[in-house]
Structure formats: structure tokens, C-alpha cells
Length: 94
Image (tube, rainbow, N blue to C red; front, side, top):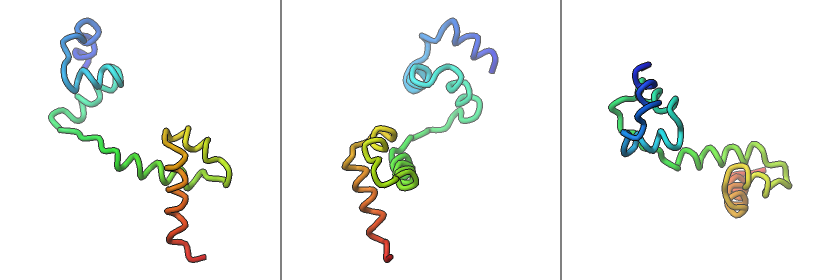
């Protein structure tokens, strides 16, 4: 899609809707890759998967005293971190 790269350099103002948002937030290269591989698909980006990944990350990296650091790193509240840690202990039988 070399043609798309060339035309976007000169006329990206013609983009609208989701394409404009992808271009503005992610850049030209991401937009072109999406067009190359996923053209015609409706894509919904759910927060559910990201929340699950945050939980796994926190459980993997919690060292007993780094709640503030983890909250900052994954972009959530300290309360969210404590809730994750509490979740992990509910199923423990040890």
C-alpha cells in the first residue's frame, strides 16, 4: 500500500471517523497496517482483556510493598491493586 502512504503524507485531512482517530492516535504506519490486514472488519477494543492483563501483571510483579508503583505503571488506583491482590488470596488454601 505504498500509494496510501504517499497520499496520506499530502492529504491526511481527508480521513474521517475511525480512520482519522487511528491516524491521530496511532500514526500513519499503524493505519496502513490495519488497512493491509484488517480492511472491512469492525473492530471493538474491549477494556475487559486489558483489565485481565493488568491483573496478571500485578500478580506477577507484586513484591509485598510496591502497590503505588504498580498502580502507576498499569494506570489504575491503589484500591484496584489491593482488590486484585485480595482476589488472588480468596482461592488460596495454603
